[in-house]
Length: 355
Ligand SMILES: *[C@@H]1O[C@H](CO)[C@@H](O)[C@H](O)[C@H]1NC(C)=O
Ligand SMILES: *[C@@H]1O[C@H](CO)[C@@H](O)[C@H](O)[C@H]1NC(C)=O
Ligand SMILES: *[C@@H]1O[C@H](CO)[C@@H](O)[C@H](O)[C@H]1NC(C)=O
Ligand SMILES: *[C@@H]1O[C@H](CO)[C@@H](O)[C@H](O)[C@H]1NC(C)=O
Image 1 (cartoon, rainbow, N blue to C red):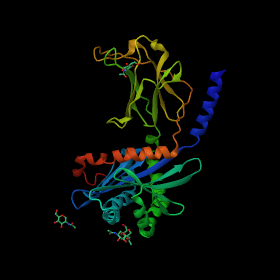
Image 2: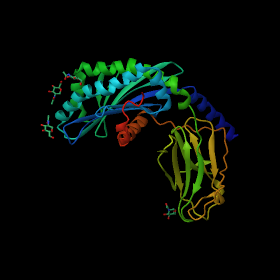
Image 3: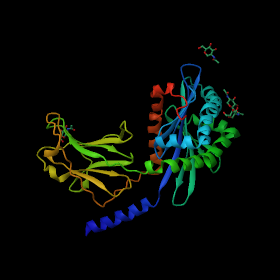
Image 4: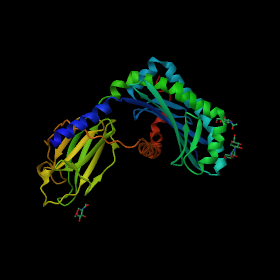
């Protein structure tokens, strides 16, 4: 009875979730004024958290990052041209003044300004919504209120820049056009070409690992896509937190992801009461792996034909982070990730790869 109620409740939640299909396009722009007196500009675009293109204004590189984006650029040179224009001309011109004025006003030497304009499409209503969020040296800085077209200071030192940006109509008009026209159009074009790839789900392969008989048991999931997934340990069907350590979701080289959750469990316990549960956020299926001592991989033994029991259950657990908390987390995370495309140094020889 209890289970039926639970199932009903969860299915209700699931219907609620699945009816709201959202897609987003976000552009992560970084202007840095570093050790030299030269400012550097770069950006990368993400559709539904998949990197679609990448720009390095300083070295004049603009390139697609997915096969389906290459196809879009080949078949619609205007979209490619707009990206190159943004990368080579508009961003350097626009941000040069912004970063110069900013660092002088705040009297800082080295500085990184990251602005993320983006738009989101709710496919059930067909409505677009947009945002512009800026960080400065890794901290939240300014956010544009698109109703009032005024900036909102997110840190004490942002107040003075807010006043400057509020008065600069070039900056306001630029973002207004981006959010209301150019990004919604771009998102639609990206979805036309990438929908199939973006909407796919690759389930993980899950394995249990343990270094020594006394160390924690690690439940490791790899090869999954998308990265909106969660994993936890349960005891008698209830999620547990004590003795559990969550690892971060990390990217694999093939575009899939991996993560692991460790459980510190004493050998005196009945291990079969514990399960490792993997689930895509908002999805129906769960991959449940029983803590079975015979299935654990260790450094000492190397079982080749390891099979992991996979049970799909019609249960949904919805993790609904508050929108604010999520954004703050994303900002922090993306700020950390923002240097990632630059590490890809072999880009330098690949100018104009779309042609
Ligand atoms: C930039 O740096 C060079 C030397 O590194 C210096 O000669 C030049 O005056 C500097 N320019 C500005 C505008 O500060
Ligand atoms: C406003 O910002 C733009 C873009 O960076 C810049 O070119 C322009 O000089 C600024 N206007 C004023 C009055 O500061
Ligand atoms: C920054 O821009 C504001 C407004 O355009 C201007 O009044 C101020 O003098 C500028 N500061 C610097 C250091 O360029
Ligand atoms: C596991 O738990 C035991 C007892 O609760 C504790 O002494 C031990 O330090 C823990 N080990 C790890 C790796 O957390």
